[in-house]
View (tube, helix red, strand yellow):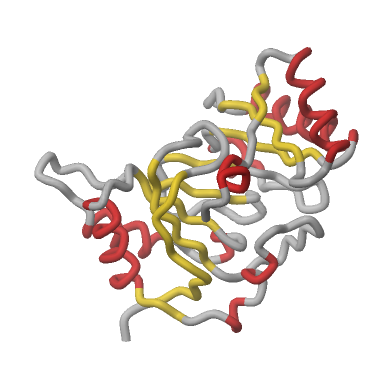
Length: 213
């Protein structure tokens, strides 16, 4: 049988958050998450047994179709996608989307960083959580650090994560604070902090404001 992964949904939309907000993207949302954030807006993804297995070839073919329809990159998200080994999925996607210039669609990964990296993604968005800190290798490999702000302690956690990258990493990732959805305290904290700290930017969940997936 072809290798497969549990999939919650796949869809072609706009990236709503972070550095690439507003760009056309194809999303593969994998099931399974043990991080358990109480504010999570995709709790339906936590239990992988509730979602069907889809072959990696099928996922790669769907990605290639979305690429032809305008998707500029594919986002592997979750759940927590790194609960799964992504080597074969990324390999199939690269093979299916290879163009005449010998380039394949860029692969973006959205992760909390609790597991070791796999799949060699082209772009890593790390959204670490205080109650389940990321492993150091994944933290130091990220291209953008996006910390959700619910309470003031989350700002201290964001500073700690950024300091670890600054002191030990080779990359200089983009730094984002993202207020918890429908959280006035988090929004006020994030805005005030960004106004005083020019290295950081505010990330908004624009897809929710627009009412799109």
